[in-house]
Length: 314
Image 1 (cartoon, rainbow, N blue to C red):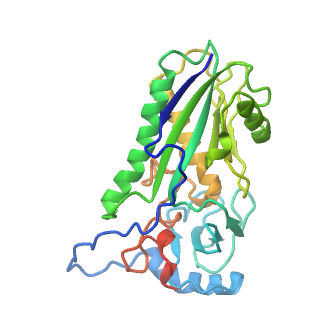
Image 2 (cartoon, rainbow, N blue to C red):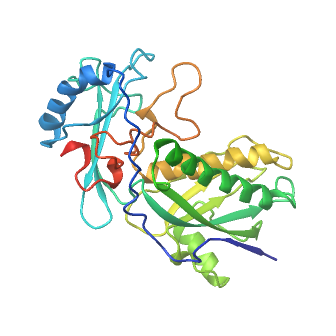
Image 3 (cartoon, rainbow, N blue to C red):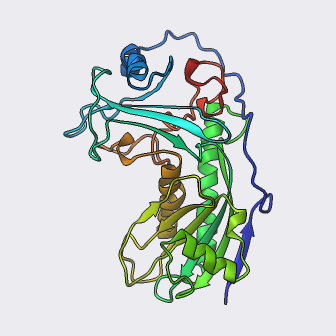
């Protein structure tokens, strides 16, 4: 037996959010304050030219990780137009001089790759919740729907705080509950798609296919499979080894892990971008600084860089 819940404002249409232009900010008279990022910018601009042959006059530079553990670094990212809906993402881990490449904990010093799902747009998501008697209760779906609303509310609140006309990212969620054993291989995107199609569902109509599999017999995390293949796939397992019915707070943490963390990998994010050294990161509930996803206006044209036809002052 299955229950289907549709929460999409536009059905299954796949829309791309464009022209999300912020309103004009209120002028201020205070003198600008020089930040570490300002001081490092000339060297970082040179590094983009040296490492990638790219002109990026106003790159995104995240500085909070300087002095963080054994691998301190500046993080700098630029999403450049890459043709069609994709973006070319250039990213570097730089020492405090802004010039020297350093390796993060995952061994990367720089990244240049095509991002098939830029961090901007309106995305339709088919979420498949696998029902286990031990962990999934009669109220779990309503809790998930509320958590999904919180995801969109976070993006809307960020846009409002920046004076943007609308959120840069929005998800349209459609949710399906399937019984335990319905998905023989829940970690395999092709297998999940085939199982759903055999039931009369149409995962190909969505931008994202997200599986939530809180199996009480297995402790595991989540993962994403970035690439051009649609629907783009994310998986979330029982990362806290829950053995009893999950609460609304626990469902909220699962939703954040699915739609901030794993979707963030599709947007190009790596774990080392913004390591947490101490305290609570200022960018929560997002998985990394909005600066690095291109959600800030860095070149003063009142358009977030990820939506800008000439981003980063190019």
